Image (cartoon, rainbow, N blue to C red; front, side, top):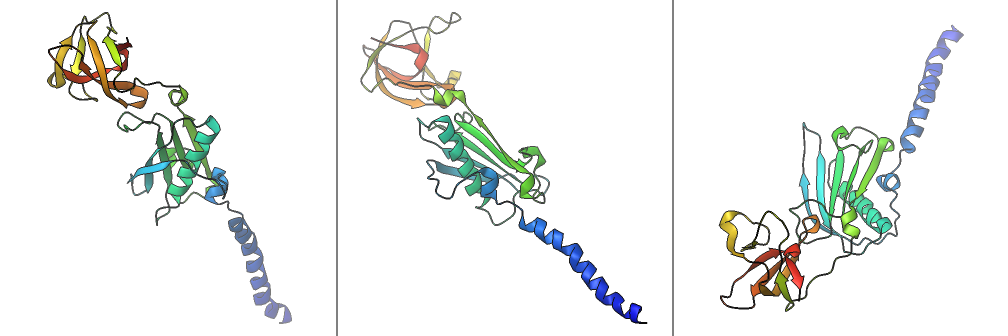
Length: 234
């Protein structure tokens, strides 16, 4: 009888013993900051432009677009993307299954990320998004775009330049009314190489290059957009 009375007590001890390792395992789970390697004193140098929830099959995902300044080193660029991943992960009230950050160095954001892309997800894979996977199994994968590190110079407003051909398949330079489109309905004129123009302004399209707004120096006056490779400074 005495042995039987001890059974309940032994059962309690056994249950506590079994639950203790599980409690310790949960306590050892890293934070998102630890997994991403972001230090508390890091000073970010980026601007969040927008955030989009891309929930698929009930799994919460977040896509974030940020703008970074030109001139960051590879190390600084990656550190800023990691910080943006952390800030984005912590910004929503639900447990996310994956976060992606697209970093841009140019003003235009419709030509694809031209600085870096970062993903924070189980195994570093956006496709493996799962909010139930513990953070110890998450990774960050960062891809830096080499074009971001290329030095760019721009023609200043008022610079005189000459139109030049960029392709053997055309003998004219298309002048567009829009900086981002060269469809037939957008074209203002087809100009011959050698025409003298004055730079009015420019827009940087990242990987797609720089486009310049120019005005013909001689009559008839025309003003529109050309690609940077169609200009040669006088």
